[in-house]
Amino acid sequence: MGVTATVVGTLNLTFITDAAGMTVGGTGTAAGTLAFGNVQMFGAAPVTNLTQTVNGVASFTISTPVDIRADLSNTTSPNFTLAATLTTADATNVWTVGGVNISSGTITTIAAAAAYATNTPYVFALTIPATEAAGLITNTINFTATSN
Image 1 (tube, helix red, strand yellow):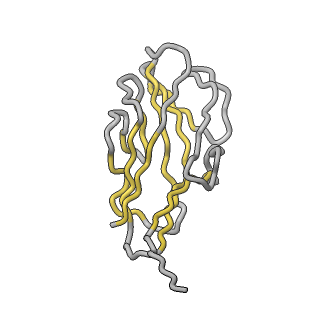
Image 2 (cartoon, helix red, strand yellow):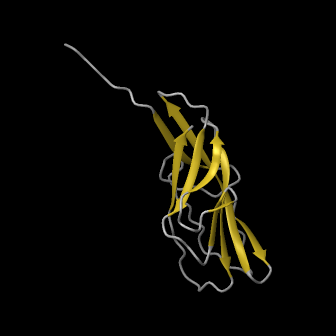
Image 3 (cartoon, helix red, strand yellow):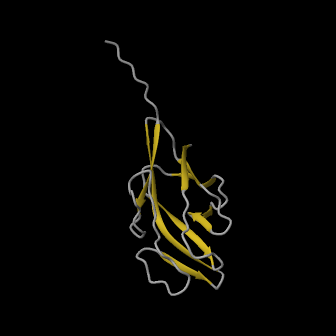
């Protein structure tokens, strides 16, 4: 019996709850979720591992670190590029990952030479203007990891 197999290199990207961050739903998988819950600009009750910063009377920012990890198999690469895009562009709120604004909905590089096999914390932040109407804010951040 003849047997053949073609080995293909892979890169696995996962989202993990950071020790100082909010719980990531689906931690350790490629489909993590963050639920900030009810937030408000003034008089908010503290939420464990959620940082809230009031920016004068103009806006407030909620943020938490999330660990992102990439593991590589069956190929060589010294590091990888991590990019993100917001599924639906948001002209009202400011969405950032690792300090990089992704609100435009276009793919944006977060890290050009990220390390493999290590949990790297990136701060996820959402800045909401005081003029935003009360209600649900929801979106999806799509990540791309490309070996260098």
